[in-house]
Image (cartoon, rainbow over all chains, first blue to last red; front, side, top):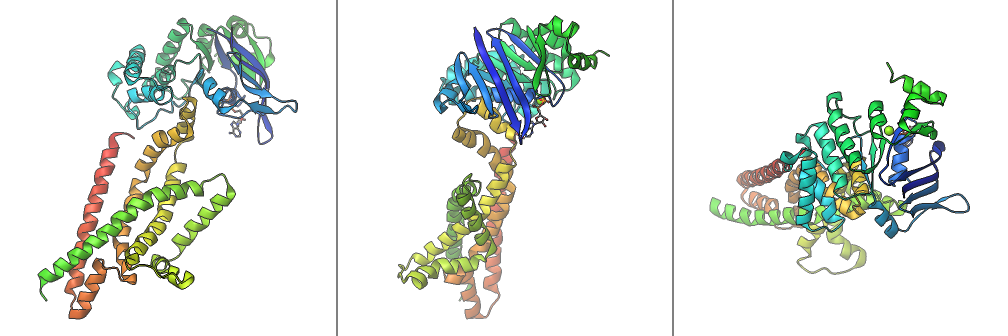
Length: 253
Length: 216
Ligand SMILES: Nc1ncnc2c1ncn2[C@@H]1O[C@H](COP(=O)(O)OP(=O)(O)O)[C@@H](O)[C@H]1O
Ligand SMILES: [Mg+2]
């Protein structure tokens, strides 16, 4: 089943086209890695997919429900606020710089949205929150505040925060880029574990080995388009596109 | 007239000063937030209205504003105001004036918030008002506490401006005693009172700041 789909997405900033006609789809349980040089539009693509950015034209579809359609004039038309609210609950996003709420304790960061947004029962929210903290190896940090944690721990809390809402698909925008190199491993392991549980994920990353291991499908973006995509071995070992070759070459040394 | 009479009179004046101070904060802090919203409105007409409001209230003397509020209804509209309007006029004048200052403090606090906080809340499904009241405002309050403390200290001293429409606050009373007795003592005692008042307020604000230091 197609869980998530983008058709002919276009997005400009001040007349500069940053996403130029991108289409892609993600199957249930699939892990898609997006790679590409900086400035190629990877973050913008995720931000459009998660409605942080308004698209100019194209379609965004979650579980067959249109979040955005395009009218005859080629202009994007967003679904009603109520439908968008529902669609919003299908996805989660993990930011490069975590964006935890500094005034909330670790557990409150995780359970506040379920309680506030989903009207979940407090007891149940705490139960889910604690089990997520165990899963992230942070059971002793329940009452800590974000500033007391390392970057890797903060990122694990932010992953737990996203998971607490039980999304169908999780987007990651360079989840390890803000971390010291020795801390990236712990995040990559968490994502690998999620992949084993068949969590559907779209991951923008600069960790090529990780992308090759964890992804079912790799998308190489360059200049606002998908320059090449395919199975990891295909892209990593046998790229066809010159720009892909050039890009991957930089990671070979 | 002895010192104990002076002190008891000044104490009753002090209560009026404290009342002006408390009521002003009570109303101008929330009103300031509304003015800040207006000042940041997407609608240019609303935005400009509040921009001008802030500009005028910060750009003219409070003492003049108090006189306009007090005398305005009669001089402009010929409306005879009740006797107790004196005190009400002081509160209205102070609230309107301080709301303008607080609005700018709120605005700078709100604008200093990282965009990532809004984005994280949006992706988690918080509504606009939930985002503001649960995520943004608590952090803004922590950030703006130092400038708000400054304003509160200034407000204590500003309460003496109520003398201009003869409200019986501490300064008005001290002045009356001083001129009746040709003595500096009433002013010295009033000064001590103001200083103690300031000390209590500064101490309270520091205590609140410490309370909010549980996160960074
Ligand atoms: N809010 C914005 N306003 C203007 N230009 C932007 C904005 N966001 C991104 N861009 C531009 O869009 C291009 C793609 O950026 P981005 O999606 O962040 O790339 P990537 O994540 O692949 O590094 C860049 O040239 C960037 O400068
Ligand atoms: Mg990026």
